[in-house]
Length: 61
Picture 1 (spheres, rainbow, N blue to C red):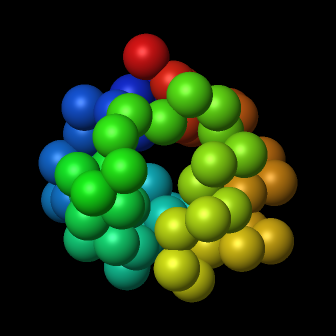
Picture 2: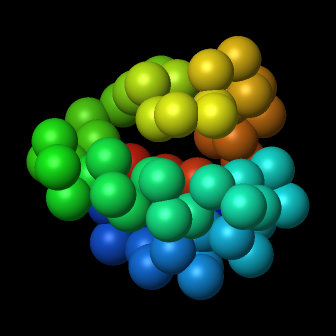
Picture 3: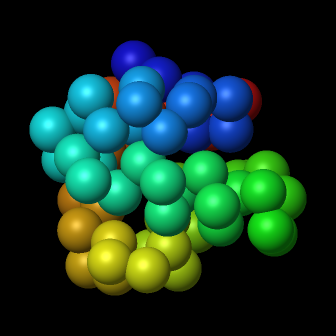
């Protein structure tokens, strides 16, 4: 389980469902601030429609 608000790009890429998106998640977080809800990951380029099931491996801290 990773905290999407503190994880590095490498840690995010280690999650199979997010592999290849770590850089974009971190960039989005740096530009817009912390995530308040998992659904906000849908706004990250390349992740729209791909967050189903992530609540088992990602937490918002």
